[in-house]
Image 1 (spheres, rainbow, N blue to C red):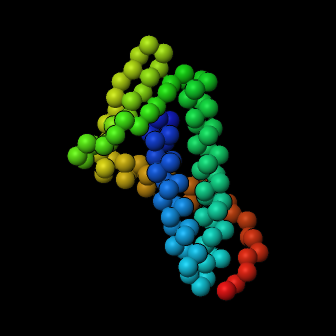
Image 2: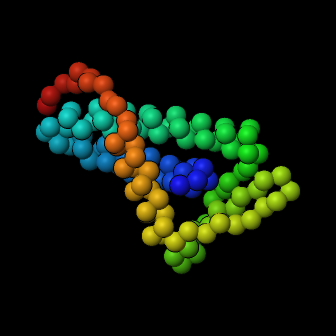
Length: 118
């Protein structure tokens, strides 16, 4: 996965984890999962802003969401005087997001936080 794809997939994965966090919080044994999800969200946020900074300062590239038409999601990229449109199907975005989520779940260490049990 290249930097542009990761930049596109990270915000989607963050939305999924934030949604999952709310769902896991309803479990009686939520504490088991919430520490991991907290750590993953924090790690992903830091990486997203790091990639954004890298795209701007090193690659001098700007990526913007254009919109969705039928089953295609479009992003516009601009690098100096060059620009173009990159298209992804919903299935491609789903695969990219799944890959990012799996990598972060596997590679993120979480600390044990004391949380009240309800």
